[in-house]
Length: 539
Image (tube, rainbow, N blue to C red; front, side, top):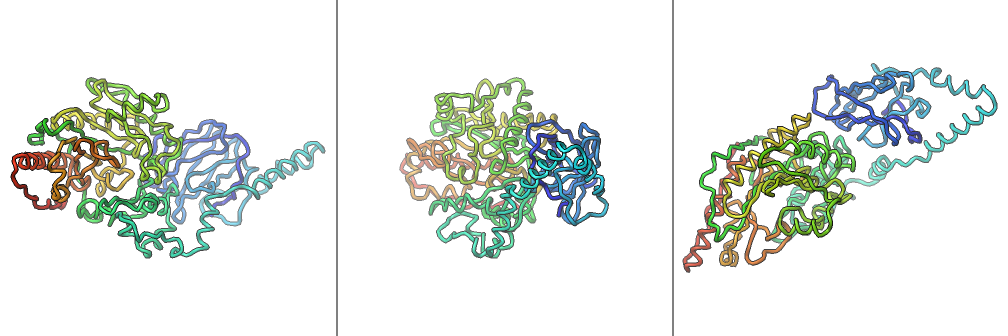
């Protein structure tokens, strides 16, 4: 319980933002730079709350601020400077702390050992002196106190209220109806699992219901099984691991995140062959996603966080040189015609019409802080703030997949170097690899694909089984949720996790060559065979 009950912040005072957050050990200090704002309060980055780190810093008044882990949550302490009193209180949301002048706090009955306590007489002193002064000052003081008291009694606390309302009903009453759903989430979310997880939250306040809402709202197709859930931050995969782990295991061909480790390999020289027959393959593409550590993922991020992602990424990309050099284009500064042309040319992500995207909250504030960066040849692109913080793409017309992958590896390494050079880093751990919004993209986040023309094979009833055994995925010409035009399909790797980038690109090369061979055999009137299923490597 906080030492002070927070009142609504009616005054414009200091607001601080913890810059360039990184994971540190408990007891280490973090740089803290306050900045003046027209908003009320003094906000600390939510990662301090979630990781229980000790945070030190000073405001312009000379005050020192730190956070100490107490009973599983950081408890705040504030040593006063000349302008602020000894009072720091959590806001109604666990995402932040707000610092107010001492007059905006009411002391509560609890105390915490080791944390400096304010002197009630010292806090009451200025107010008492006002009451004993001239009548005009007494009237002003009483009016101010009444305003603050009314604000305290009438303040909105939606997060706390929602939590209290929810406790009125047992988990069984909140459990979603998933009887007609065909997605991985629905297969593993039992009433018992829901009951154990439904009241948990991540450090940013992200809940289980927010994770699964997109899968609840979109039951899926009878023959296409989607994932049905998303993450709101890096910690989502730990807090709700009881549900995410089996979903990941199903989606990634048996990869068990509890016992296995993911490998990364961006050495393009290891690729064998990699040049397709261009009578069938029209274009080649390799993409991945990357998330900036310390900022919420798109389903949960605020406008400020989204704009910070854009700032960090665009600043880093300005350092690209040579054939990777280019410029950034904001969606908000494009005309509708310019956007549509980039979409039609398969350079830009589509407008947020996918129900999976909108139900997950990833289309909020569109198109604010979204955009595309590309080099001069439009062969190396970065999408900003669509489904993930970034999507890094290498692409070109024709069938030279090896060249596309070489550019991809070189560009991705350079982007990561530039990000780290500016004090940031990508979300990554050895169990799940690179952390992204959708569990389907964990690990490498890589999708190596081709636009391939298969007029005969696509009509064969064995086509879906061939793709399944080759661990390949079929999409329409325009990508997910689109139809195939002229028998042209987007074929790519199904898995992202448990295999390295080199292994996945090689799998696509071998699989696409098998599809081309099947198409040729059908052209000659010969029979085709379904290949044996690929076995997942145990790392």
